[in-house]
Image (cartoon, rainbow, N blue to C red; front, top):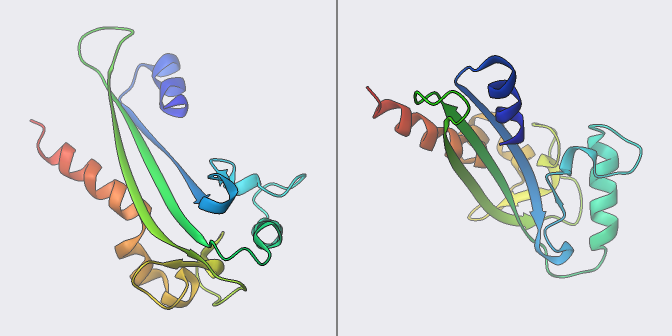
Length: 150
């Protein structure tokens, strides 16, 4: 919502923005919204982020995790400084593998195994991931909402 609000406040335009995070149960929901910058001193260094996460989990048998995307939508409603606000959430439950598996995708894809599958997002490939992912689920909810508008 912070990202969308920034655009609204500066340009008074209808806007949507999203944020995604990997939430690991054994780490009290970390890395969460800080997923891209989880390893200290890095910015979008997937290798460093995965190494840190796997190191923190070590031999912990609670590997439950989920990816969560939230899309915030602000729409003009006739009130200058108070747009209508909506949020659309997509979640995919899964587990963290003990080692990297696969080469497709980005971020934590090589270590995230979605529930109901035996392969990581990186092994499943982009086509499958794009059908079942947290982002796909959130976008589907946004698209359904927008399709019902005049």
